[in-house]
Image (cartoon, rainbow, N blue to C red):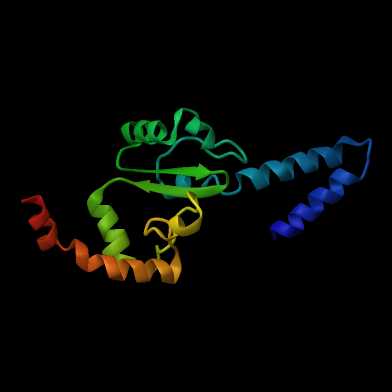
Length: 155
């Protein structure tokens, strides 16, 4: 569908027409494409900053990701939705909810994270790994962080 839309946009932009109708149609299609995913969190009732077409909420990162997350946490609480461009991202800071989603309920569903960060061997970090590699690393690490072993470290 996206390929068909992009081909249509290319065709409309490459043909010259003195009529404003194709340009208006092109503008409307571009706007719809840039905002097509931006209603997801509103539809689900999840609060979050208002996205900008094509950029999402990335412009909020100007002062840094840490400041953006702190402001969102203060304004929206333990859960909010934001957009990296057109990609919806759900931020959760409640430890119990994180445990429920990532460990108890949806262990096999949420194996992938956003693809950002370093390249090379650092991509094998548990926070950046995906699919089977993530499952393998998590299986190796899980016995290391049992509650009994963590209590021993704290003493």
